[in-house]
Length: 375
Ligand SMILES: *Cc1c(COP(=O)(O)O)cnc(C)c1O
Image 1 (tube, rainbow, N blue to C red):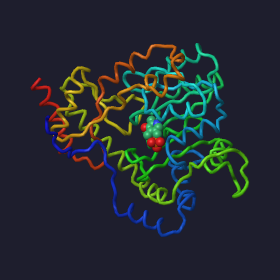
Image 2: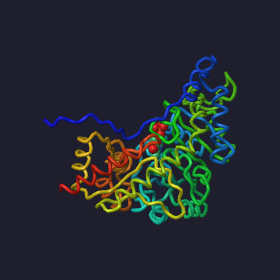
Image 3: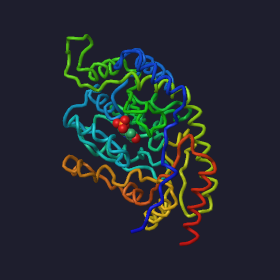
Image 4: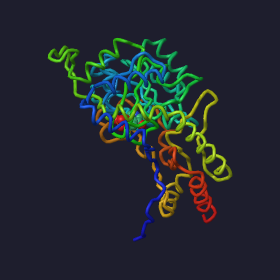
C-alpha cells in the first residue's frame, strides 16, 4: 500500500481572529442563544450588504432553500428548473416539498445554468413554477435572460447564492436580482458562522414574513401556531460570529481573487483549463476549479495528495444521476446533459482560502507542472 503524505495544504480553511473569538464569547455570555439581538443585527447587516430589504436567518442554506420554496407557494407536483451540476442540497429541498426537478445543462465556460437550456425546458415541459439559478463556485449565473424568461412566463427566480457571497452580476450583488435568494454560512463558504447557518434574502415582504414564521413553528406569537412550521432557526453565537466575519468579507474576497489571478498566471502554459470570469461577472472564487483530461484527473489528484495538497471534486455525480433522485426524476430529464456529464469527469478543485500564501500557491502549481512533465 502506498503511504500517503499528510496533507498540509487543505482545500479550505476558516480564518479566525481575536474579533471572532470575542464575538463568540460575548454571545455566549449574553444569556440568549436563539433568535435574539445578534440574529436580528446579522439579518439586518447581511441584507444591507446584499442590497435587499429583508433577511431571515435559517438553520442552514438547505433550509433557506426549502423554506423559500414553501413561502413561494410551491406545491407537490410543481416542477422547478434547476441545473444538474450543483451541490445536491440545491435539489433536495425541491424533493422535500414534493416538487419535481427539471434538470438543465450548464454553460461550459461559467459552469452555471445555460439560459438557452432553461428556455427549452420551460417551453417543452408543462407545470413549471419556477427556476433555481446557482452561482456555482462563486461565479454568477447569467441572470438577465433567465429573469426575462421568468417574467415572461410568470415564474419565480430563486438564486442559490450559497457559494457566492459578494459576487456581482453586471455590478449588482447576486442575491438582489431574483425574487428570493438563499445563502449558506457553512464553514467552507466565503462567509461562515463557524457552524451551520443560512439566510433567505428578498425584497418581497410577504415571502420574508412567511419564511420567518415557517422557521419557528409557524408562529408570530409565542403560543399561536398560525401555520404548520419547522424548527429551522438561527443561533446567537453563530450570528455574532457572522457579524464579525461580515466586516472582513470584502478583504477576504480580494484575497481570493488575487490567489485566483496567481493560479491562472502560473498554470497558463499547462494542459489544463483554468476558470473564466465572464465580462459581466465579478467572481468570488468560492472554489478554484480546473479541468484536465478525464483519464488524467484521478492520477493528478493522487499525485497532489502524495505531495500534501488536498483537492476536491465539486461534484463527481451530477444531481440527475443521484440515487436519491432517480425515483422522482427519471422521466423529467427531457434533454441531454452532455456538458454536465463530461465536466464531472474532468474537474478538480484546488486549495483556495484567504490565508493561502503565495508560496503555497506556487508550490501547488509547481507540483502540477511536475506531474505533466513526468507524464
Ligand atoms: C452549501 C450549499 C448549499 C447548502 O448549504 P448548507 O448550509 O450546507 O445547507 C446549497 N447549495 C449550494 C450551491 C451550496 O454550495
